Image 1 (tube, each protein chain N blue to C red):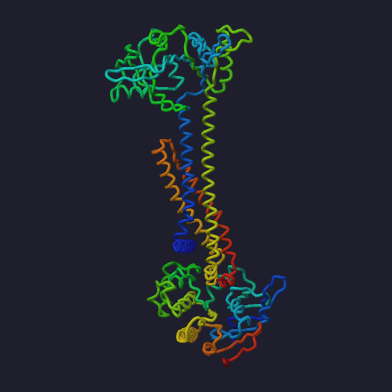
Image 2: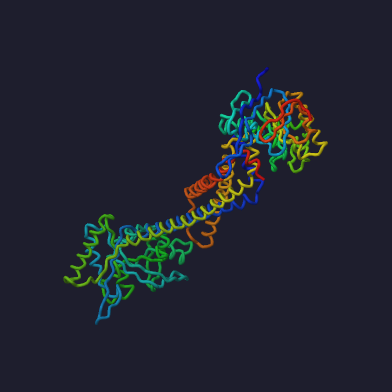
Length: 408
Length: 232
């Protein structure tokens, strides 16, 4: 009951000096708004990264052909196709690996369907590729081992390709021309979205690797593949798998002791982990920077409240003379600071949500405004109010009635 | 003789100086007030009468001595208990009115009731009733700055009366008012004393004001030099 009455008194005092209360509140509004926005941007970055990681597949290795060196001039990785489909089959027998898929991609390949055409990556691979990437079909059926054996002219379309060539039409069952060769579309892949580097993963056509190696793209080194993707059975087996693959491929390529590998095995999980950590750090840094503005807002509140206590010394004296106890005065000033924070906090949350929406609309960034972040920002604001409001309130309550009354 | 409403014995007040010594402002004051008395306190500036009033009003504490108000030994009480006494037993009227500038007359009168924990509608009802008694019902929603000096002082008196005090302390209540308004205020004090038996202690410089009282106490240099009938 009395709390409510004192709250009314506090509200009246704020109302009596609207401009000052409003400006003080602005510090809080901006602080809380910044925290909400920055947390939203940080969480957006985290969710983008984790989605990209999930879309890449887990516990992945990529095995690339080695560098060639001819007459002392060393060319880059993958310049000599040392990996073959046979290597991929041999790797598939390793117990530490669950899936192995050789890949023979060819970018900038012209596609055509009736009047429309499109250029994209045509990716020759085996059925395991879909398992490795945990890529499901939206419609139709997946590649089969039979398709690979027969070097069948069948294709799976990524969403972007399907949309570009077929628009609203269902592509499954239609015939597509790849470099003027007819391919039957047997399935439509689910959307994957952007990769970690920002590449559109849905702009792709999957075909059997044998078809790609043989008929479609002339290959000076028959049976070779561009790279091999392999998936370990579990994260714990990554190290073992890497050692076994190295050993197996060295044996198959007949490399002597002391000779350099003519291939390289890369662990993709490490890349994913780094990306996830940097997103977390980014999110933390943004939050920390935003917290500073909240802190500055809090100091603004303390400053104004201290001025207000000095200015209202006589009022405090009058209140004490007619029976206000120290704790009544303390409560009133504390409530004034808290009300500034609470109102500023609510406005700040709204501002933050609005700004996050603007960022996602205008900058096209992924932002995630979570309820937890809002509650966190609001509680932090209230904490700032109590922390920075307490000292001025204590100072007001500690005034001696006679001296406060005598104050001019 | 009935028990006094307030009794002061051996009351001393020193103000500390910067060098650690203290200047005495009141020397062993002895005073006893019966319920229903109307006392004028006079004395030159610096004679200690305002300090004495502040101690009686529980706004300040004595350095030594005893002060009993309505059977309570005030000198021994803590801050919250003093606040409660100021709130319930004492009404204070100041020379400068001391109204809250941003609150209406009604809110000013109701404020002691707020600190007494009285509910909102009851606060309003009692404050309105008091304003009516003092002829200010039309000014209930006015801010102090919209009122004349006499009206402001009447609002202050209404505020002092809101918790039915046993003691009304007035520190030069007419000091800022013209003669006619001063007479009006004094007649209010007279009426309160006569009709409600309210005990009033009033500090003044003006003999014309002191004439309204029934007993006169004179201060000089921290001592009471006269205590008796009003002889000016």
